Length: 320
Image (cartoon, rainbow, N blue to C red; front, side):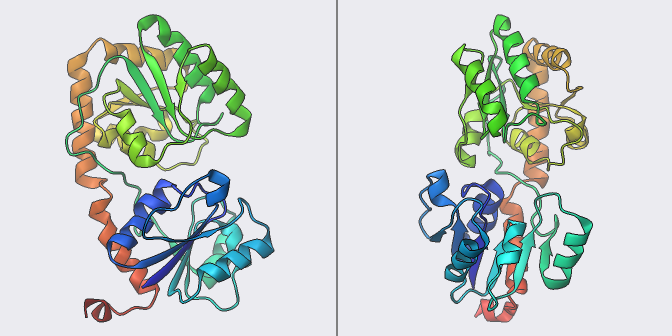
């Protein structure tokens, strides 16, 4: 099968696109052409891919031209950017839209009539679980993922300042929204925290290992998947989350749920800092749950099979 995967807005190393969907297709022996803003993000495509560079938020004409190049001989197109649905070439294979953003019911209904949609059952939220992560330490906390006001940047910076007298550092690993970048740069400049910017998923997960806890301080209004929490669980870290991530944490018994309030988060961090046995227990519970239910390689074959069916390739043809 020849699959084309396309986005004009996401980082080419986006975990869901590159490290789950594309990697699963490549590992299954399929050919993949990836239309993405490589130059904008200064990313070199990985080996084994056919890459088509496209401008970030490319206008209609340039997006369509990039899709035409990417769709040569393709059996399937998977798009991660709803704008691309308006730029589809007339001649094209079956189209699948991975709905990753908030869209109006009208747009969703319109797309459903024309294309297939990826559901959570097709590509479940998952992570790469370490087989044997180190135990949680007591000198730093970590946040993986995009940084923005609604995802708790103000609270993270305030927490970092309050943690300094207690000998606990904060590592922030992720790209930031333009309006909060000056705040993060200033906080890093005065030594409150370390902000690493965007880091490819595999490296980010290794960087997180051994932390005291993983933080998820999003507001309740944020519509986001629990992948960040799964990432922490897969690396054996206790989780400190606002109610937005409570369901997964409480089900696994792997962390603490607190309000989006600096004092509450500070108290949770300090409680864990003083209790190594509890840190180890929470980390172990989360790791066991992640390995049992949220390890992406366990779901990859089902996604590949679904993609093959979307492309109209009979199972017996693939077995020959």
